[in-house]
Each structure stands twice: as C-alpha cells, then as structure tokens.
Amino acid sequence: MEKEIVALRTLSLGSYVVRGELDIAMKEKINPELKKSMDKLVELLFAWTKNEGLLDYLSNEEIEVFSKPLGEWTDLEIIKAIWKHESLGVLLWSLSLISEIPPYDNNFLLEKLIDKIPLFKSKENFIEKVNLRPMEEIKWERDVAEHWFWRLQIFDTEKEKSEDIAFKNIISSVAEKAYLDGYIPKPIDGDFPVLGKPFRNLSLNEFLRISYIIIERYKTLNWLCEYSEGWEGEK
Image (cartoon, rainbow, N blue to C red; front, side, top):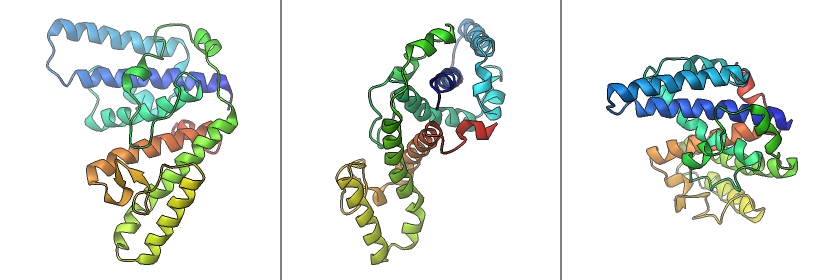
C-alpha cells in the first residue's frame, strides 16, 4: 500500500471521527451561542475535507453522514463513527504516529488519535511527515488480528456446542499455538484471554465491544496489506 494513500485515508477518517464527536456533544444540552459556534466548526471541517480532496477517501456512506447538519446524526451513525476509532488508530500506527496497537480488550484512546490529525492544515505537510511501517510489521499485526477474528467468528457456534468436548479442544489447541507463536497472550482455561477471563465467558455487552475492536482492526489491516478493498469496497 502506498504511503500517500494511507495518509489521505487517515486524514479523511480523522475528520469523519471528529465530526462524529461533535454530534455526540450535541446530545448534551448546550446553549444557543455554543450551538452556533459548533455549526460553524462543522461547516469549516466539511469545507476543509472537501477542499483538500479528502472526500475521495471516504465511503459513500461516510460522505452522506458527514455532510449532514449538526445534530442530525442517528444513534446508529454515531455508534459507527465510534467504531471507526479503532480503524483510525491502526492507520495512525501504520504511519508510525502511534507506537503500538493496544491489546484486543483495550480501545485506542480517542484523545491521542485526534491529537495526531492536523485539521485545517495542508495535506502535503502530513504526507511528507509520516513514515509507513515496513510491510512485514504490518502483516504481522494483520496475522494477530486474524487470530482474534477467527475466535470471534466461532463464538456463536461455540454456544451451540457448549457440551462438545472436541470443539473445546480445537479452541484450546488454536489458542496454545497462537500463544507459542506470539500472536496472543497466555491462554486462560484453554481459551483466548480477554478482560482477564476466557473469551467464551464474555457477557453480551463485553462481546459487542470486543467485536467492534476486532472487526475494525482486522478490516483495516487487511486493506493495508492489500488483501481486501476495505473502505473502497464501501463506495
């Protein structure tokens, strides 16, 4: 993947995430004067993204939502924007602006992500500044994500086969090999360790949060490795 394309996708997604945070802020009661200032900020953010040609690096769905007036994002659209924090974090990591990808039971910190996005500045300066990590390093992280994605995919099947010893043994064997290969921390009770317990013991809310971490990271790393279309396939 070319550094310039990764950098431009990062800038565009960063502006999209910031736009989502503004709509989240609108869920709180704010005075008319602050609302007016935020409306202006939304206009400036969209204008900057458009003028820098960054809209070309958003999916059609992202552009449609991004262009809405302040306060008109649906709850689902806001949730999707929050999911994109993980994708943005991986992109910033790939450009060497973040030192490491957090464990899969920890989110990227939004404040640190936004701090790395030079809003309202020239995209050329950002492209020149960043350095794309070696592809071997990116592919390693992609393989890490693939192991977690595999564990996510079989979660429902596991519930149906809760008494199937052979199925549990498969998970245990995969977890042990993934640990020995350096892809995951030491297994707990023969399973991928997450939030201090086996993956199988996640509550519904915990499972949903871990799911979006895994999916967004895996999808983004696949795109970086050119194994999939990524956001381009959503246009």
